[in-house]
Length: 169
Image (cartoon, rainbow, N blue to C red; front, side, top):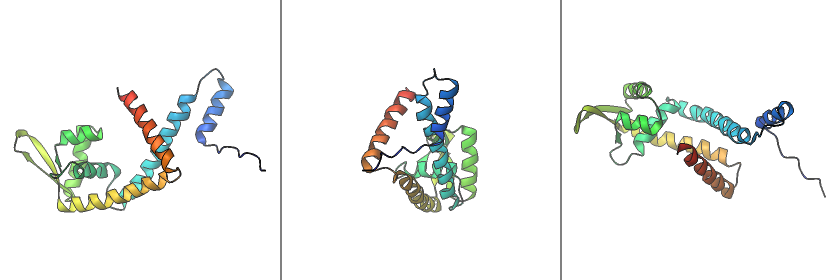
């Protein structure tokens, strides 16, 4: 019978071990969770940025196209709704919209219900690109999740939802 395998260690384990050396009085459980969440988010952002680059767009621009695509049959939102949905400042959103409009992927038009407002709508080319890019981006995420079995993925999703809801309250 073989000896039990030592658990694999990551960069966060090294940080926790360093804190244990210099400050053994600290409870570093939060570092174990949020350090990994942060590193995972950065690694996945890089992968997603690469997936989007194949379509000539940034991750942030993809997020705009995806928000419009999933907004329903009209594929239309206001710049303010997009900013709120994507947690981006209105100035940051304007830059994204400018670039996507120049590329012919969306159009801005006056809101018929609000003289001061605008509506942002996907063009046919924007719809086509959004549909292609979302498949590619989901494949990147699904590949990363393949390190876990289905049950553990569901458990992780549930745990992260609980934590996010608690933090956002």
